[in-house]
Image (cartoon, rainbow, N blue to C red; front, side):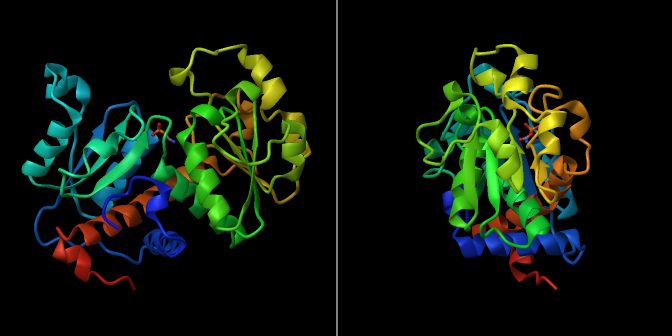
Length: 304
Ligand code: CP
C-alpha cells in the first residue's frame, strides 16, 4: 500500500493486518524508532477536531515530526493550488501527507505527480478511510468478528463519507449492513436495505448514527423533529438488544441524532472510537511509510 485513498485500496487481508497492528499499538508493543527526522504534513482544508488531532497524536507517538498547516494562513490565500501545496510539502522533505479536502476525489489530481504517500483524511462526500478503519476496529474489539454482525448506518446517508466507506468495507468483511434515515437523504448508489428507525434499533447489533452534514446541504429542518422521527431517543434505546452498541463518528449534534445523555451511556462507544482512532492511524501511517520506501527505519522495524 502506498496511498490510502479509499477503502477499496485495501484487501480484506490488509484490513485485518492493520487492525492487528493497531491492537499492537494499543498494547504499547511498537516503539517509535527514528534515526533521523521524518516529516509528515497534515493539510486540512476543511474543519476537523478528531481526525486532525488524532493524526497528529499518532504521528508524534511514532516519533515523526509534524508539519502543521492551515489554509487560512498559507499561500492557498494567494491562489496556490492543492497540487502545488502538496508538491511544496514534498520538496521541503515531507515523507507523507494527510489531506482533508471538501472536493470529492481530490486525490485524482495528485497521484500521478506526487511521489510520497497521500492519506485521505476525508474527501467531500467521498470516503473517510481512517474513520472507517477505527469503526471496524471498535466493532471487531466488541464482537471479535464481522461475520453476521448487523450494522445499521442511520441518518444523513447521502452526504456522508463515513457511510460510504463503512457500508462497502463492512459488507465485504461479512457484516450485514442496513441503512436508515430520511428518504430525501437516501443514497441510491448504496444498494443496502432501508429500515425505519424503530425497526433499526431492535435489529441492530451496531447502531452507527451519522451527523447531519449541514455544511453540505440546505435542508436544515427542525432539529427536535429529527430526533423524534429519525434519531435515537431514550425510548428507542430501551428497545435495543442487550449487547448492542452505539457508534457515531462525531462531532455529535446532541439532542438531534441522539439524546444527549446517551452519548456517554453504557452502550455508547463514541469516545472509545476516538481513542481507537489514534492506534488505527498509527498503523495506517506506518503502513504508508513502509510502502513509500522513504524510511528504512520503519521498514526494518519489527512488531513484537
Ligand atoms: N469524525 C471526524 O472526522 O471528526 P472531525 O471532523 O472532527 O475530524
